[in-house]
Image 1 (tube, rainbow, N blue to C red):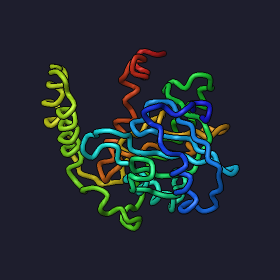
Image 2 (image 1 turned 135 degrees about the vertical axis):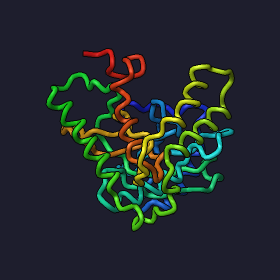
Image 3 (image 1 turned 90 degrees about the horizontal axis):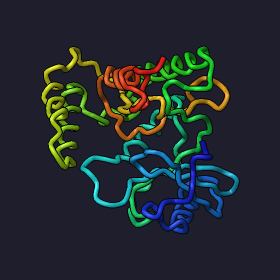
Image 4 (image 1 turned 45 degrees about the vertical axis):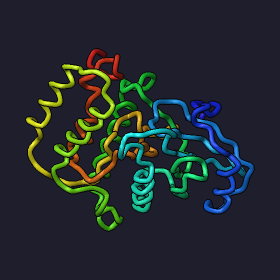
Amino acid sequence: MISTTAEVREAHRFDVAALERYMRTHVDGFTGPLAVSQFRGGQSNPTYYLQAGGREYVLRRKPPGKLLPSAHAVDREYRVITALGTTGFPVPKTYALCEDDSVIGTVFYLMDCVHGRVITDPAIPGLTPRERTAIYDSMNATLARLHTVDWQPLGLAEFGRPGNYFARQIHRWTQQYRASETEKIEAMERLIAWMPEHIPGGDEVALVHGDFRLGNVIIHPTEPRVAAVLDWELSTLGHPLGDLGYNCLPWRFTREWEGLADKN
């Protein structure tokens, strides 16, 4: 996983000395000097690999610049990861949340670096059918475990509005789409009209991830199991079928969209 890091992009650079001063005060056992590189990939929130004093950390921050309302909620990520960590759920250990923009320019949090495999191709090439099955079984078990977490004792009773999840999500993402669209796309207009008329029945409430898929979990380096679940910025209280349906999208997508529909 660490092989996917490189020098920090120009637009995402910050004052490393200021971060080091912050970590000396807020991270138990921290000793410098601090070395910083950036993970490559499609993260909406810039993510950095930190090394200091023989230890490894990961920093995740809001990107600089003008942002859509409620987007890039790294503070929510920190809150849910910290809460789940107390239950033994597979998430990185968290160290600190900094909401002071004067430190490195935007809100950020610090967590442990979990080593393992990040796999984006849902066909999981290079492994045996048994190993691939075991990985997906582990993902399914992890998702089921998440949806059965008792979220109220974890201090997450105000983490979202229970009920009416699909209608709220459709409304929210339609608003986000309208705020960023540059031209009318007829297929999107049809989809926006179709979805509110086809909301599933039932109104179960669970802690949901919001972006649960193979590319957002770390697989153990040698074992076919989930070592950590990442990218929690869309997590909330919602309907468990939302996570399940999203995780099944590769069965419908073609290889152009990292799917399995046109693969044997």
